[in-house]
Length: 223
Image (tube, rainbow, N blue to C red; front, side):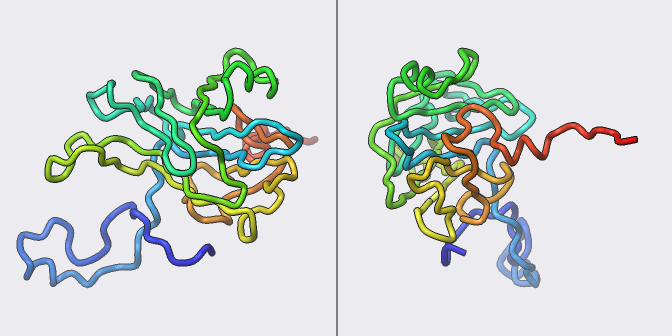
């Protein structure tokens, strides 16, 4: 709904997987594109235009059922980073447990925690460098290459990416009216505007959004 965009897919759907030669590859008829790949860790919330002078923040979450180390495999000294409109390098050795959320604030973490009323148990990091553009911009969560192609340095793998905007089809209520952008479901492709919503004022830093909480309400038997 935001126009043409290339995306990494869950699996190849063209030709033959693992062909032995070009002739073997050409025997494949191809298939419709597989769904877009969504990583184990995603950007789950973006407060880019807070109301009443509140603080900007991003939230990431490990949506998998196993711990994820935020560094290049086997290289804790090369942590993941947020890049794009803002930049931030995650602490060395950071590991996200299953379902764990981390908030990256635009101000001092303790200052943000107090202002947002977050519990001491919540993980708040920061501050990130730069500001989230109210007019929209691209954000990426990246992991350093373990072995860069051709021996190049400074290359990254994109773990998750979002290029948000203040106008429809993006939820317009997130543009200075109080709510944050919140991912409707963690497994949905992040670059699609209709996969995001804007609900409660102030957002839900460090916890599931209202929509997610409703989905997980326990069933009550009615006699």
